[in-house]
Amino acid sequence: MRFILLVILFGMLSMPSIAQRTSCNLVNDPGTICSFDGTASIVSVDRTRMLIAIDTINEGVIEDGIIDHLFLYTAAAAIEDLDMSTPFVTHLEFDGNTLVIEPKHQDKRIEITVRAEEQKLKGSAATFIRYSKSIGLSHYWDFDEEPRLDQLPFLEQRTCDSNPGACYSLASYHLKFPN
Image (cartoon, rainbow, N blue to C red; front, top):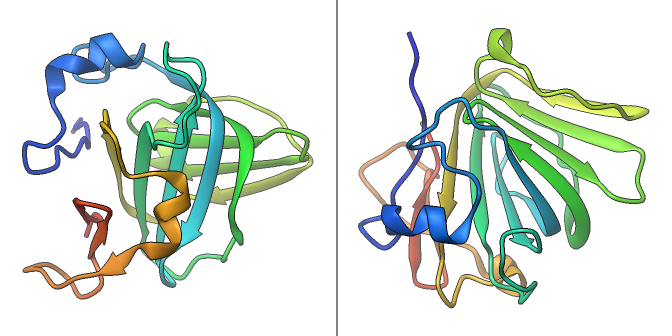
């Protein structure tokens, strides 16, 4: 059974602008491997949820502090707190199933996989961190003026009709972690 987990945020993120803003088009071409370079932050929200944000430099826009891609990950079991909320330069790859994060100037590789049997992204690093006991990985993109990387410390939990702790607000956006 195949599915693509892409989240569209209450009509605030427009699908047609993907082709203009990014070379990553998982909607029209599910076999695509998206490659991003830029400044990122990883925030451990709680014991099973992690937020990954990147301001890209390789998608035709300048690095401006605005988050270009936001990934929300929910693990099936408690995960290690990476303590990487301070912005760092990185390379990311995403194929709709696996997100690989390779911080520059660090011998570390982080891999988040929703369906481990389908992992196809490659890389190398001395320190390899893999999260494969997963509930889901959501991808938000094409933000306009916010949220910004410097707003991540102000991520606020909010209530919703979902599992406790799954819903958050960042700037003017409502985010829901997979559950």
